[in-house]
Length: 407
Length: 91
Image (cartoon, rainbow over all chains, first blue to last red; front, side, top):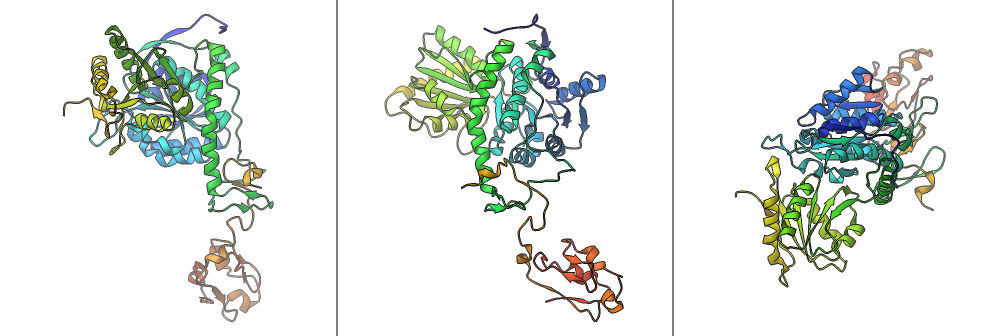
């Protein structure tokens, strides 16, 4: 039974404010961020917290996102809980340091306010930016509403500092970042009870000097003390192992959060109407909420449709997802991103997860909402209906995704 | 027995001579000091030592005559370039 120590403190917050509240309640100690649309109000909010003394943290103004992540790397290495936020081109500019933070196993938390990437210039929402950073070794969480943004940031620290893997909390620009919603803001006492202080796995200490992440050649080598140490490949193995094992921690942290705050995060994805569904729609982030409306429309029309909303994209919840999709005869995947020359990223993941299982579902992939193109529930519902043709025998797969656009 | 026993989760080491292996193996040209030209060797007193100051790998010892540790000298040739007496050749 969920326990609450106080009356709920419901506030009207946009997504950026929810993320800033999450960082404040997590008692972050160092913030290094560079403003970029649509993340800018998030950094403004945090700098105000620091300026007013509501948050005891160093706010380090930097000249670029690359430097922002570099400052986070150093701060995390000397034992500070570290936060940054960015979008689109800013995240792309951080790319090198995203690899570095993950390779150094530093539990930095980053809020990515999802925005399209140029060319051509576009400041509106899609998920191409964070999907392009899929292989940097970060855990990726996608929030579907502003409450999830706040809750996910607090959980992200607990996850990151348990498994020593950085966490990216992604949420859709404007759709969430600039849209106000009622958000239950937890008390500082409850968050303190949930989130213990950060214990670094390594610490730069002048009295006990250490080298970290120097040139590490292909093969293992004895160190100065005669101990056989990892080569580059062993360290890569450990990062993969940490992400594989992180699923367990993510669920455990979600359960603990549920016990203390009453909101359940004990699954890597959420589902609705799946019990009797032979058609399942899949989407990630706020897009899944739009798909949920489409599912209600289709239910009214008599189709047995359900929805699976992806919350955790890395590590990808292969086994549990296969179980949830076991009964589906048709899976319709909506992606706000595209791996050019292939298909939407979440569709590829789902196909890969289903290989070797008993599932015999036809899979259709639709690319929607790029560069802020409005996604209407009716369009999604129509796409599902158009996909019913795939239920005919022998029509399991279409080579490339379909696009909901005017071409 | 694998490398897990080192218990590191990222690359970690203590500062020590030879942390990057025997870097002398990287060398294609070797510095040779001619003590008949070298200022401290000629004067038999501590002086000059510009090669010691400039060596990026700290493999030159400030002795009379100077000594170059060829186990770690990568053969960059900076010592030859900076020597005012032209006492060092790369061979």
